[in-house]
Length: 298
Image 1 (tube, rainbow, N blue to C red):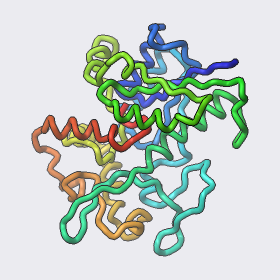
Image 2 (tube, one colour; image 1 turned 45 degrees about the horizontal axis):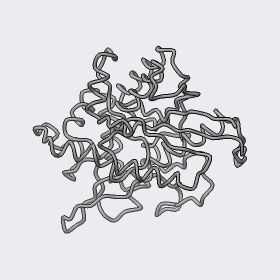
Image 3 (tube, rainbow, N blue to C red; image 1 turned 45 degrees about the vertical axis):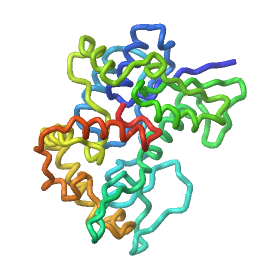
Image 4 (cartoon, rainbow, N blue to C red; image 1 turned 180 degrees about the vertical axis):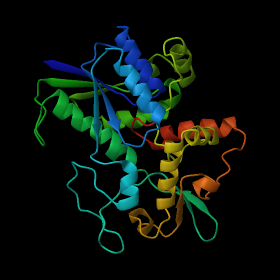
């Protein structure tokens, strides 16, 4: 029997703690064969800087992979992540490819506010990690079956305050007898705040939250952080504008107006200077737990 131990590395708070535990050979984390970072191409600069720092530690090998294009480019132009063979959805002109929906806020003509479904995490995170395990770690070809003598142990940075998210991920792995999920933080009752405290004396900078610059789950505090880096803010605004542009593929798929900010106004005009509401910030962080089976936010 061959066993492989893989960390889903989001390069945020929780997965960073797991990676450092592996570096320290802590008993809660076994020796890792690899840590895989699925890059949407849209993380804030702080995440990429932090990822570069993690590589300097000379710990378990970090593999960077992506879906073949940037998530935001798909929203603007309509592009298909590599590795997908399903039918392409065209826009109203019939000339664009499909896109992976983000959980954008919607505003109807009557003023009612809703949210679109999320496809981005699966197509740009979980599927990318799965393909990397098969191809980079196991050396399999496309559509080749995993050998019967192989067991994959996948470690995920879901903390004790994300119990519902743990249950969702476990359900996805239920029928995969050779693919076993592990949640060391949840199993040791470690919360996100506990991770931050543990990292404080081990990392020479603030560990960023892993999320796209234009993620609709940002609190106003996080939007201000994005705005503090001109390139990050410009990209977030570019994607936000594209959600409503007549020529973009995502606007053709919806009758309601789409927005990245919860106020349902263009991001450049949103009141992100409003004081931080701790309840809102907690709800934003837990929104991943309610909606997402992937590794965004960790």
